[in-house]
Amino acid sequence: MNVQGLAKLSLLDYPGKLCCTIFTGGCNLRCPFCHNAPLVVGKDLERQQIEWDAIIQFLKSRAKLLDAVCISGGEPTLQNGLLSRIGEIKALGFLVKLDTNGTNPQLLTELAETGLVDYIALDIKNAPAKYALTAGVEQLDLSPVRDSVAFLLSGTVDYEFRTTVVKEFHEVGDLLAIAQWLKGAKRYFLQQFVDSGNVLSPGLHAYSDAEMRYFKTILQPVIPSVELRGIG
Image (cartoon, rainbow, N blue to C red; front, top):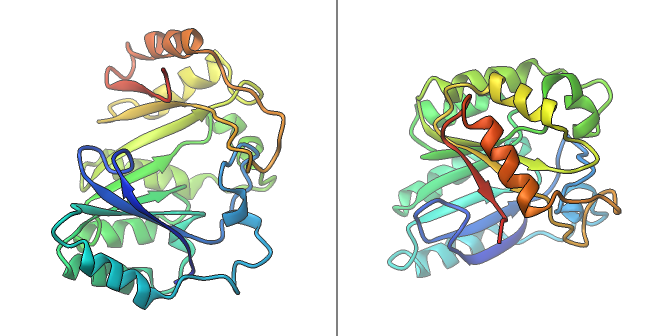
């Protein structure tokens, strides 16, 4: 598995848990607002990797201090050997959360039904009509993402949906369309865009805190559980 980074402690990546976060390299989407551009299109993704043995040794040293491991990216479901690596993490007693774009519903189903993941966070890029544009892939087949959404809504595994809201890509109508798509969701987060300095397409803009709160208000009749992230 291509591991490009390790955040040794996070209070935010797994709701209610102390966790570390493993970052994998490579992604099949090219979202212009992606804040981890080096993990998506970095020139040295194959050469600059963290050895898996080092990850396991770190986890063993934190077995009594951390509750969980978050696997993020990039897109982790592209990684060869993901199931076996997660199996090793689970054997050490950790909960596992997976961050994903939802393009591999078969793997998500297998991970959930075998108990290898305890929590899945699925990024919803935009309303279906604008999905390809927002994901940066012209000929995107949305059916796998639809399948992943339907699977999570079935309640087989704990989950959340989340959308990073960017002025250049999202309008009120788009957010309402997403809400209709995700109707009945257990958790849905609107995330305020932050320019990390490593975005794929610089020059994008965030909505204000007040605008984000307005978006929450208009979505609540459809998804009462909607919440905000990144708001001061």
